[in-house]
Length: 549
Image (cartoon, rainbow, N blue to C red; front, side, top):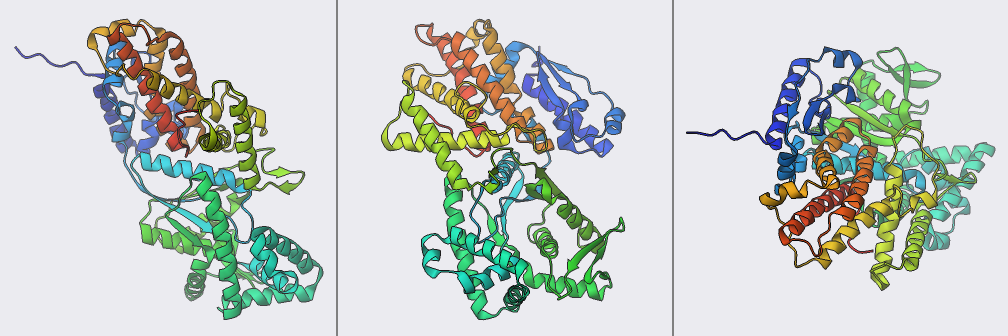
């Protein structure tokens, strides 16, 4: 007599995911967006399309209902505890894609300030997330290293620059020279013309100014790499606007030949499908930032065969990227999916008394505060150099999590150091502390091996905190898909905040010491699964999980 195995939670989640995939194919709706509408509730898997933030109301109403799938608490616990990778079930059902993510993008000859922080951290998170989901991702840092502002810098440096100060304090000296040069350009027509002439020489590839340009670019990159190393940020390609200077000449020639360019107020540009004039060429023949961005997009599409180009910048550039998308449609150089991941600035962090705040100052302050709080704490388990390294990691955790804990365009609470460094509230420090607590528990219970025991399952699930922990673990992949669909880092951050509370409650009731060995091993296994999920989440945010603090 043959017995049919009852479908497990894993089987049921794959089953409902397959139904959703078929629905996506029939309705031509994005598969990922629909999969992000699957949710694990108490003993039930549901498909709730109203939760899909990228789905239009009419599309939701046209969807046929997908029946829920029921499972038992014992089966869910068995799947979560016995299978290390069970928290990524849905991720095996998503179509993958090729992406270019453009983020950070500082301007050369200027210090790295806090204004770049959100683009850098959010862009890095999205690249991490997309790779985790199986996408092929190219990370690009697109430097602002071209334009008339360099002509101003060159003309001003010849007049008031100092090679000695450039060696000792390069970026601050260059900013000082540029600010003064900009004022001179506004007040003195002769100087303004000299600045334009300097940039014209650069575009003409004149050796003297090209050598100066390379020198300033190299100085800037060396300083930026120091910051990126501290932040743990890496790129596949660092490229400047300058890389597309010659491409813009070819593009202008092509647009002229195809009679696409029209003239207005001394400028030449394109007319979009909506009838808007978008300037691309100045009266003196120089191209604009947008012209170079068009060439960069065409190059990326061709070189990487990318399905989508993501640009992570603040909302002030919304019109620029709308113009980019509109111009590419007019030019018909390929099927482009331009995604502007726009965000607002965090109040109280970007400026101080009207002046930009340098990122290095913020990093130093974050590390100082973390180190100070560790020295005061009676439970600190690290000392010396290890304490300083841990303090820096905690400082980064505080900054990263605060930067990503709210919606990109939502109302963001003003930056507050005390909230940022709260050990008990929703903060990066508190997340790291929860992770370190589990690691310490595992270290002090080396004689107990995290292990699954079927005969202890019912006893284990008598604890409501453990039932809650297992249910929350089952939602990890669902959280990542929501974050992927909405491009919101706060989906993961809020999940991790909830996970931290789950860990704290589980700690209070799931005793390991002086318990029956098999039950202790089961409880320790629950804590290991919680630690794995928290560590994975921290790594996706771009942070190193701290084991001792």
